[in-house]
Length: 608
Ligand code: M6R
Image (cartoon, rainbow, N blue to C red; front, side, top):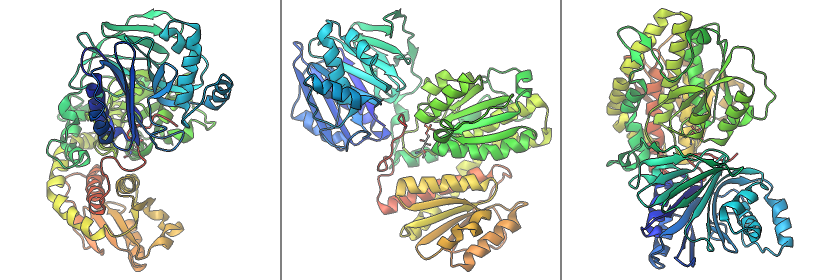
C-alpha cells in the first residue's frame, strides 16, 4: 500500500528519496512524488501518475542539490489514481505525505473552505495538510502545529511533514500506520517500511502509535501527544540488502517459491528436536499450566494468512482433540458481536504484521483479556509489538505481493505451536512424533518437488493459460490448499478462480463446469481417496478439463495428472500447494501479467 520516505542530512535528497521509493514499489501503488527544500525553504515538488520510473525521469530533468525532503508512493483510497491526487500535498507552507485514512476529512474540508482553503485534489491528505497550515498560524513551532492538527482528526496516519518556514527539520507522527526512523551519521532517514532504509543505515527507531518526532540532521527528538519528551530506543535492523534482490530470478515471486526449502528450515531452526520428538518455542511466554488451560484457539488473519489458519486448524484439532479451533477472517470478526469463552487463546497471523483488520482484531481481543500470540514475519511490525508473545516465521523479506513462502511457514509455525500445546497437555505422542518427523523432512521434500515438477508445470501452464475460469477442489486438508491455490491464480493472472470443498461440488459449483473452465483437483491416497475420486468422476462426467495433483500411484482419470512422489503422509498438502504456486506463476507469465505487482493489489493492507 502507500509508502513514505524522508531524508535530512548532507546527501542529495532527491536521490535518496527515489531510491527508497523504488524499494517500496513492491507494496503496490499507482502514483509517486517527492518534495525537497532548499536552504532558504524554496520547495521543489515533483509528482507523477504511474511507476516510480516516471518520477525518476522527471527528477532527472529537475535536479536539485537540496538535502531535505519527503517522498511517497500512493495507493488510491480517496480519489482516482492521478498526478493531482499524488502526494506530497501542499497547503501554504506545509508539504505532507500520509499513509492511512483521515475519516473526518469531509467535515474538516468544509470548515477549512470557510477559511479560504481551496482544494486541488480529492484526497483526505490535502485536507490534513491544510489543517496543519491553518493551525500553524498560531504557533512558530511545526511540531506544535502538527500535534494540534492531529488532535482534531479521526483516523489512522503515518505522516511526514515539511514546512518551508522550517527547512532544517521534518516532523513525523504515527497512529495506526508504521513509520521507522533510520539514524545515520549526521543524517536521518524516514520510511514506512524497513526495506527503504537498506544500504543507508541499520540503526533504527520504530515509532509507536501516539508518538511524534522532530528529525534534524543532528538526530531525532521523540515526543508523545502530550508533549512529553521520550527516550528513543535504537534497534539494529535484521534485514539485509540481499533479501530484497531477485538473485538471478525473473521475478521475486519465483525466487520466493524457490526459497521455501530454506525458509521452512529457518522456521524450524532450533524449534524441533527430531530425535527426542519434541517441539520448543521460545517466544510463546506461557507456562505448561497456562497451555493446559487453553480450550479454544481462535486463529485470525486475512487472505493467505487466513487460509494458512484454515489448514493449520485441520492439523491442530487432530492433535489437541478436546480443544475447539475457530478460524476467523479479521475484517469480519472485527465488526461481529462474538463471545470469547474462558480458556481462549488467539493466534494472530500476518506476514507483514501491519494488516489493518488483523491489527484491529488484536486490539479488541486484548481489550477483552484474551492472550494473543503472533504468527508474524516482519520483525518489529505493529502486530509483533502488540502481541503477548508469539512465533516469528522467519522467512525474510517477502517482496512479491502474492504470498508464497509466508503461507508455508505460517502453517509450519502454527503446527509448532500445536505441538508445543500437545506436549504440555501430554496428548497423542504418536501423532506428535509423526508430525515432527514430517516437519524435519519437509524442506528436503519441497526441494525435491521443485526440481521434479517445475518443467512439467510450466508445460501444463502453457496448455491451460487460455482458460478464463477455473475451479480448485479438494477435501479435508486439501480444501484450504484449494482455497489458497485459487487465490494465488486469481491475484497474479486475473483468471477467475474459485476454491471449493470437493463435497460441496454438487451443492452448486458443478453447474459451472463447461469449456471455459479448467479444474485443479487435489487427491490424496488416504482414507478419503474413494470419496474424492467419486467427486472427480462426477466432474469428468460433466466434461471437466481436470488437472489432478496427487500422490497416488493408482490410475487416475483426468486430462493431466501431476504425480507428487511424497515421503510424507500428513504434510503432503503443503507439497501440492508448491505445485499450485508454480502453476499460478507460469499461467500468469503466459498471460503476460505483472507477476510481482499485480493490478489493484498492495503488499501490506494498512487501511480497511
Ligand atoms: O501481511 P498479511 O499476512 O497480514 O496479509 C494478509 C493478506 O493481505 C495477504 O495474505 C494477501 O491475501 C496476499 N496478497 C495473498 O497472496
